[in-house]
Amino acid sequence: MGVIDASIDKHFAPWLEFVSEGRVSGYTGCNLLSGAWKIEGGEVRVGPLVTTKRACAGPEQAIERRVLAALNEQARVTREAGRLVFTTPAGERVEFAEAR
Image (cartoon, rainbow, N blue to C red; front, side, top):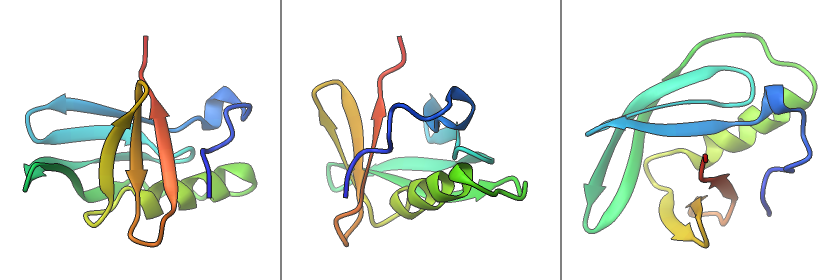
């Protein structure tokens, strides 16, 4: 399991923004998302999330599937070398680089 390929087309690059206290928004590589986040037991938890329902095909479908699998309420969120890393209980990782 690894990082989503950084060489993908910029139009499909997922992003996540902690908009305000308790709210998150982003892009899955195909659809927009929004939802809640909180700190629970010293860890960040994201979800539940809602997304738009645009049909996805090709590489954006695979990207969205990985992003949504990792952005769930059971994922562990850590910060590693300037990246926000979501790790599912099954070990799937999705990393978000800090926007500059």
